[in-house]
Length: 132
Image 1: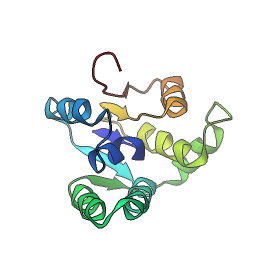
Image 2: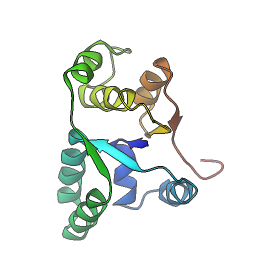
Image 3: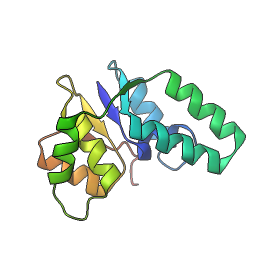
């Protein structure tokens, strides 16, 4: 499974500089995509701020990916993750990804989140075009 946080999912809803590289990377993957309930809410809130079209795109995307619930173990891990500057919702994403036994990659464009995931030994991907 590929765990995607909101920084990655957002690039599939609203075109950003990394969107083409991300779409290309996805095309080369055979694993399914998953996020947690926090990612669902974050993406819906982001899309609502952008436009009705973004809201429709977000709902379509969310209908095609698996969702996992936050477990007590994930909540406990999230509270302990370094670095201290890691934001709460980002810690919840990392902890959720850490629970996946078949994790192929944690997909994020957030530097602190990537550092926290690497600290746990999780594979991290942030597809970008060359020179970016």
